[in-house]
Amino acid sequence: MSQKKRKTYSKEFKQQSVRLIIDKGYSIAEAARNLGIEYSVLRRWKMQYEQDPEFSFPGKGQQKPDDEQLRRLKRELERVTEERDILKKALAYFAEDQK
Image (cartoon, rainbow, N blue to C red; front, side, top):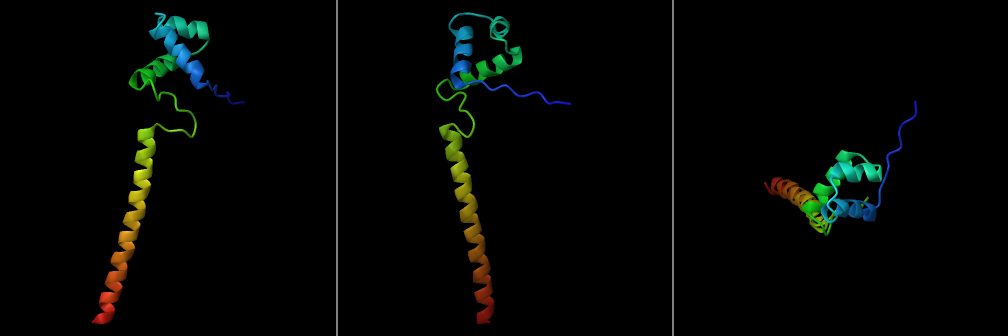
């Protein structure tokens, strides 16, 4: 049994496909048929584009600026929490030694 290879589309192709619907007035079904892609795929692209036209379709390994900042802050919080826990343990250890 062979697995189907997942098709990948460039950011430009996705944007042009969505512009056919928004700017040119094509229906999603008509544009999907003409481009040879699934209706649901094109509908999802349209929703993504409408939510954030400037940063839609970031690509592999790329993130929207807000997502990147959130990821960075989560990493920093994890590091600071770990440092705090180590200091708490050290404080408890040295407090025992003084008794």
